[in-house]
Structure formats: structure tokens, C-alpha cells
Image 1 (cartoon, rainbow, N blue to C red):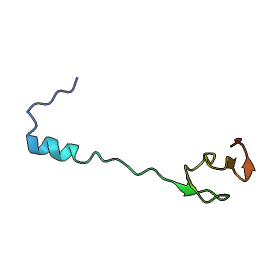
Image 2 (tube, helix red, strand yellow):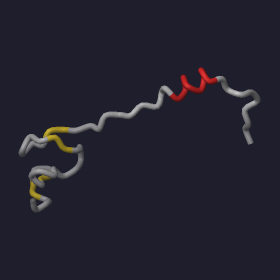
Image 3 (cartoon, one colour):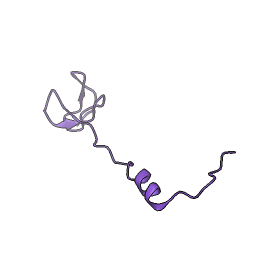
Length: 57
């Protein structure tokens, strides 16, 4: 099992942890109602997906 030979310094630890960033949720405009929605998902406002009604809203 791999075990570190030396203790990692605070600056190295904090520099490594500084790279963990939250990513922005990607949204696209709905072709029917132009509201933002998740890609490859049905629109929550009008209930359409790929040009047809799939959810009763």
C-alpha cells in the first residue's frame, strides 16, 4: 500500500485544495418558451422535449 514518506506542508496542502472549484450548471434556452433548462431534459416550464409535449404542466 502506498504511504507518503514525508508530511506534506500546509502551503502544499492548501495549494492542492485550492484547485477544487464548483462548476457552473450548464443551461440552454428552451426552443418553445425560451426559458433556461438543463440540456437533454424536458422543460419544467412548458413540458416539451424535442419539439413535442412530454409532461403535462
